[in-house]
Image 1: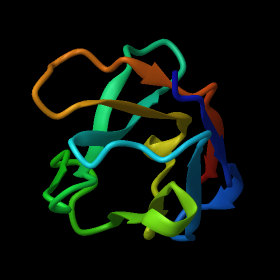
Image 2: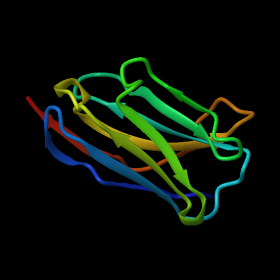
Image 3: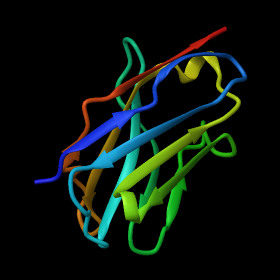
Length: 119
């Protein structure tokens, strides 16, 4: 069982930056994929970005490509989401998740961290 804990959310003005962290309770297998999702008020949860522990294969949602960067620190068992040029519509609770790369179900989820972008 892997526990994920997000941090780094907060209030920021439009155009600003934030860096989110997701710390895993233990070393995640190299065949795992880690992802970030978000859920805005009144909307469904949506995919933001993903990265593979083993080969660092990365994929972004179109809405954040070029503004957000996902990365990992193997030594710290941590996944990061660096968010630049934030927009009001980026306001949401951001969740970290993990799953085996061969699967499709995200098995592990964090509790979420709130990002509030003021216009």
